[in-house]
Amino acid sequence: MRIATIASWSTALAVVLTCTASAQAPPAKAQTATQFYVSYRAAFDKATKIEDLLPYMAAKNLKQVQTTPKADSEKMFGLMKIMGAFTDLKVTKEEPTLDGGVILTAEALAPSLSDDSKKDKQTGKITIVKESGAWKLGEEAWH
Image: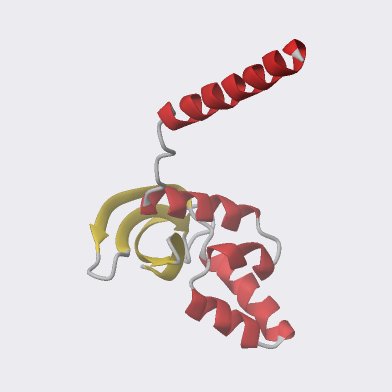
């Protein structure tokens, strides 16, 4: 009987210590819109098909992809990969929007349209939205 009591108290103490330790642990820091976009760009660079990017897309973009015929979707993805071939990406500004999203201003280098051996500086405006508490890619425009 005494061993059973000691075992019960030991278990209870272990539970209390575990709960106390987890209660004192600092909460995980929320990802910023810039951090989300940088992770999206890393996924974009590795992506081999549009489906690889679906977790990053805002609902309206996801719906558009899902309603596009497969052959057209594959062509669009190929075009996205060509047009989005950036290096040296830097987010230079983060502007909160009234709806809880963020507009990012970014700079990057892209292959020159006139000379394959050169790279041109591009400026981008990227809209990041919050959906169900998570960042998602809304719109992205580069020039």
